[in-house]
Image (spheres, rainbow, N blue to C red):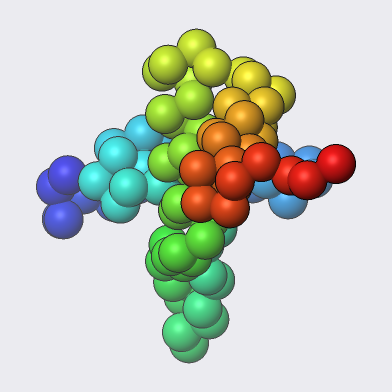
Length: 95
């Protein structure tokens, strides 16, 4: 991204603003991402807000999408693994 270039964008009817692609890519901005809006005199500073939990959720979503595994299948697999580990460490439940 050219730091000397001025980018413009139009504010839509519902207050939505499309950030130009070059700026989104260079700023690692993504759909659903959170930004901070900071008034600085007559200007407005827009900065990405990094949320660790949000980043973890986003990474998990990417992994699931890439692997083709649904959330339901993942959760069922985790339950099976948990039950297996419980049996391994604590033995079978007594009837």
